Structures are given as structure tokens and as C-alpha cells.
Length: 381
Image (cartoon, rainbow, N blue to C red; front, side):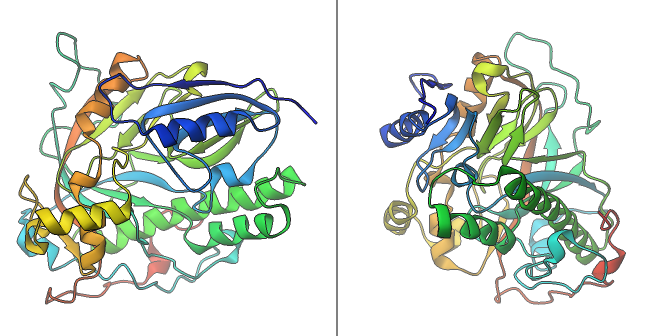
């Protein structure tokens, strides 16, 4: 048995909304055998058995710290359209609840759910870029973006993971070992890596489906960063990230809500933060609380048209309330904390135009895909 003396650091200011249950989960994880350090991000919130928005460093590999949605991440794809009218484009989004045929090799041979976005906080969003010349903190010079996005550019933001594949991998472990460590780390990592590759392929498929339906073509992603994974560090230890994006020098899209901006940030986090940054706004209400409070404050139509003028495509009324902007923390606070703790610097923001959550049968004129998924660029991985 390897006794733990892990430290815990939460990178959030006193004014940030951090639930005590989430901090308690960080300390519970820190007490596991072999843990070295737990870093909570400013979007930290409670999860099932482990905190979400945390980077957890250990000499022991714990599959449950990554969870079932291995490979979940956010990718940003530039897209060109002649006119971006949200009302018209919303009706043209394809049904991303239905899988597509794919005749090329796929990671782990897993073909179920290919080209689907999933539920929960997953989404595909058409957004407009702004703030590339003024996104830096007040009084500082904005950081140049390596993505070369400029004000007015349109992008598809895709947030999804490995769907049922990751769930199968976790269940295979927990059915025998529960929340214990991986008995065969190499075998788990091999399956884990396949799920990470599957998630990246799926994000490309989703972007291609939407771009085709909108009469456009999507480019290679300028950002595609996974925030649910485990990384083997040079010293052989393990860095588990659950809802925490890699923050060791690349750019990351920190997702806001359906009714607020998201932020593209340049990262420069160090070991105290687990070389990680926040992956989104982070929930401040449970789904049940969001449903109960939302029904008392909002109508369905209010949630389908957001304060920034964007449209939410979502045929599931319960999901609309569960994913309402008010159920999440303020993205400005999360980004402010990343800046104040010197973990990241904003380089641009994106403003939603249309956000797809799940198919809405009220919308008419929805076309199917106009070309087979086997022709998706970057599909062979």
C-alpha cells in the first residue's frame, strides 16, 4: 500500500461559486493511495464519485477519475457561409441524434453512435468570432492567437466524447475492481487511447455533417483538446483530467453557456494546476434544481431564443431547462480566475448563433447529409 499525502489547490477567487461538496470530493480523491496533488479549476463542481473540473496527479492509475466519457473534448472548426441568419440555419441542422454509416476503419471497431453528439452538456454550435483585438485583460496587450481567427469569422464548436465506447471501457473495469486502481494499466491505457481517438474522429464527423447541411465545407480544426483523459507523465506517474483541459501551452476553447460567449484562451498553467485549465463555465445547479427553478422562471420559448439573439435547437423540454444558462457559472468569472492565477490569457471570444442540443421536430426543411460519411476529411485515423 502506498500512503498518500496529496495536496489540494483550488484555483478560484473568493467571489467564485465553488460548492463545498466539490471541494470535499477533491480531498476525498487526495486521500486515495498514491495521490500526489489535486488541482481544482474555477469551473469545479461535484461529479459522480469524483469532482468535475479537476486535474488529479497520482502514482496509481484510477479509471473512475476519468469517468465514462473518455476522450470528451471541444474542437473548433472554421466554416464559411455567405449569410449567417440564425432562424434559417437552425432549420437546416441535421439530426445529430441519428448515427451515420462510415465505411472506413474506426478506433476499437466501434461504429455505434458515430456522428452523434449525445446529451447532457454536449452540443454543436455555430458561432461568430469577436474580440481578437481586445480580448486581453484590462490594461494589457492582447495575446496573438495561433489559430489566426479574426473578428467576424464563423466557426463550428463541437463538444462531444466517446459516447458508448468510453462507458463500455469504464464498466469493464468497475464491474471487477469498482473504484479501485487499474489492475493492468497498460491494457486500460490501450483501450483508453482508442476512445480518445474515437472522440476526436466523432467531432470531425459532427462538424462535417453540419457544414454539409448548411451548404458549406468545414476546415481542419484550429483547436481540438480533450478534457476527459489520463496522461502518462515522463516520470511514469499519471495525470487524470476530468473536465479539465490541457493547459501546458496550447490554445483551448473554454465553453460558456447557450446564451453567453465562450473564450479561446492561450494556456500557460504549471504543475500546481496540474498543467490544466478550466474546460467550461461549470454547473452551479444540479439538473434537478435547474429543472425546478427554471420552470418557475422561464418559458420554453425563452430558452430557445437566448439573450444574445441565438437559437437553441432542442426538442427535449427537460434538457432545455437542465441546460439553461442560469444553471451554469458566469463564464466571465471563470476566465477572470484563469487570468488572475496566471493559468491562461484570452485571445478571442465566440458568440453563439445556433446551438444544437437534440433534434427538434418542430423545425421543418431539415435536410439529410448530402454526401456519405466515408468521404469526411481526416476520417482515417
